[in-house]
Length: 264
Length: 248
Image (tube, rainbow over all chains, first blue to last red; front, side, top):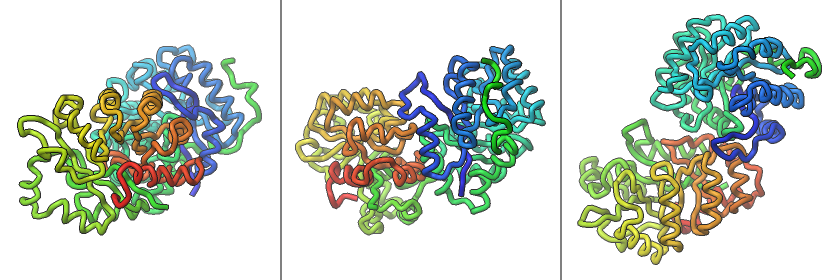
């Protein structure tokens, strides 16, 4: 069973030491354990410089075509970057937009994200957002309100709400919104919680993510592989849902090179 | 490969389902191909260990009954409460009958380095008994202070987390009797990095299930990019060195 990791990163981070931040390590590890492709945002883009970090992610995708996809980070305080992302969103290897409302300290349903969400809709690009129960920036209710106000966007709630006491609510919201999905990474989500998420939200609403290189992709994958799910459910979670949502964005590069990656 | 989970809870919890029974726990171990486990009964953590006999009478089942039902696959890691004025449990470290005991200083509200507890740790050290403390409960600072105060005591740090690698590496470098339970050390490549930095003999496979995930760490163990001998040491060898053969 080949898996698609819908939530990954590259690079180092301010908060703690990351032993293996490189694309080379991630791709090699994924190859050993059966992850076909991983979508990454670069932590430089998440953390402090969206333009440069996004270019770093694009360079990694160019170095590892079809193994690494890119979530371009949108900074709600830099609306002028909409134009750059407009040029980058359909580049080969780009999977969609990444929002991190907690790092950027802006509510996911706030005005700073509006132009980026409209852009995603125009490009038919999925959006992956951090989702954290009780966060003033990314509580699942707020994520769901974005799904309600942008019904044309496939919206992936990273970490499925992150904290165990919020999983049930996140799953209920995902079930209630056609294009709102849950992603599985996080240190608090056990295989037993994953089984419940699938049961509550439906197997077509849950996607495997690892949070590499914050977290080890082997840990995230093992959680799904060992979960007591049916074969069909497991296939949907591990890749079927990702393939359906990403569609052509997963396939071979539509044009070679990154000379036109924009924003240079 | 023999795999010992050094950190398991058995019994009902206030915040989520468990394995409540030995049968359920063994089923879970079988599913994940975990040979044996070191278990702490949930009532020793979520209740006052002093009231254990009353609880066991009420439910009609003792820890010894549970261990017998597991046919040698489970080893008890009892919780101790080293406190004064008759508030602790057991009454004295002389009553400890285990290779590894666990202390919960925050949950049970005693000072890990108070005079009573410190005397206990010296006594356990003399008897060759190791101590487990949960870093997700009390943090690393008290553990560092404990290692400095009782340098001979072997300590297993449970659930140290994936964000503390800098502190952990420094701590282990300066406190050679400290060991790490691996279940929450899940940053990318962290176990290989620690094995190279402090040695596989300092790493003890464990999960902390059901509070923490067991499935991911178990899969990771099978796919570590380490020499086979190092993987075996993490999987069971370090545990045997710490708690003794015949325990789990």
